[in-house]
Image (spheres, rainbow, N blue to C red):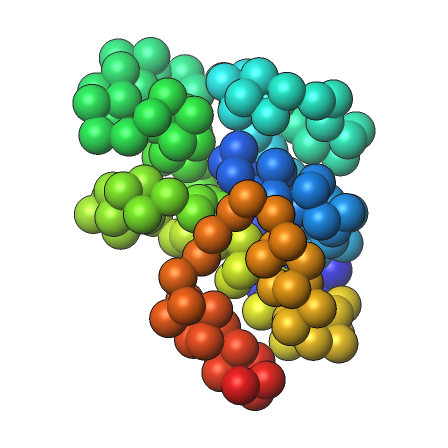
Length: 156
């Protein structure tokens, strides 16, 4: 695993669900070795998580409740846990959660950003096949977002 990926990585529900739907969940393990999530997110995912996913609760429940006024419980738990740890990378797809993470000066990416990094380090040859698989699910990314990711990967 490249040293630039030595983060405390916290994944939200949408990342797990999307990668599971397109049979790409092992990509997270290849990228980060260990991924952390919260009990709320694990419950939202609804399936058994792989052994390389750690489940950890945020300590500050009052702060968690405060965050829940801005985003849903799973995203709030991921953000609360990120605030309690250093060198954290959050994987968030929800726009409101990303806005909040930015306000809190947290390091974050989305699931498509994971695909982009995977191509940059040679774990994937190209992103387009994964995007085509995503488009065959009920997940939707804006056309602009898809075009931006493909352009960043030199696949436009």
